[in-house]
Length: 396
Image 1 (spheres, helix red, strand yellow):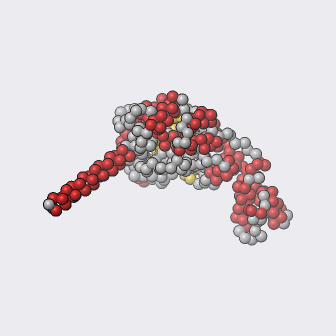
Image 2 (tube, helix red, strand yellow; image 1 turned 180 degrees about the horizontal axis):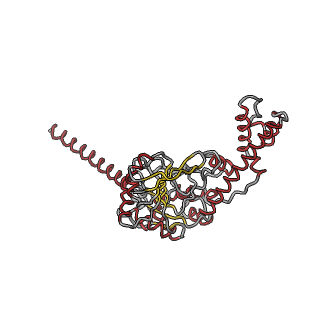
Image 3 (tube, rainbow, N blue to C red; image 1 turned 135 degrees about the vertical axis):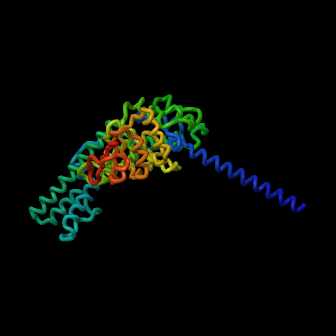
């Protein structure tokens, strides 16, 4: 009797463990099949009009995604920046730069500049001039530093305004929030998320792959279909950029790395800065694919990770196999692949097989000896700030 009772308990326990394991396995399987991970996904934002997105958010009161969009409306539809020497001079950022330039130039050989918290920009400027004691040579040098700073600001503002004008709005930030709707594990089972997707489509706010707006996940959707939809909505494209998207902020020639990031963040006090400032984003007819590490973050706050055009996992062999298949079928539009991820050194053979002879591969990494064995030769090097892009051409 005791043994029979004991065996019954063991059987029940094993059944529970098996059920738990099966449920956990199913959950993992569902996560692995999430859109933007193993299933490529592309969508295009059709409107950055503030009132349109405010109406969308109001349709789903209290929902965290809707609240996040509403909270960041001022950073979604952004106004062009006006270059004003007086306004820039008065900023805390410029005051800090003046003090830094003075300290770097003299490295302790003169008295310290006024403390940041004790003066405004005019006070910092006057205080430094006073410490220079009318020395014409060093005063001229300090004034030249200020002129150079202003010139840097002007270049950054011009580049930012150009990107804003061509993009129409802050696509990186808005794509992050939309990704929480389209790529959630429960995107096809949660009634509110389903309603959100339908509203985005019906209101003409977003267009994209049909399966994003479908009633169920399309496990058979391919990268080729996403590329075709991109070309349908965006126009002909021939450049695949891995690791970056349409950045509003980027390194600008003749400025320090990340200077634009630091300056614009403080000057505008907007939450539109993301982790891809290095790309100049003036590649012609580009399709960008941001890398994914296989996890979807749970928070709604903007973390700079979702600014791709086509969401796909470019670290996987399947991604490159899809491009190779397109090329072998004579259907690939890709003539140039740009690596801004610093992570593709182990994908060189697949990259080579994705391009025809004459195709171009561009990277910041030094890969000349490795790429030569795959039929590439180094043709040119372009400098962007402190970075160097190596341009390789496939010759065989």
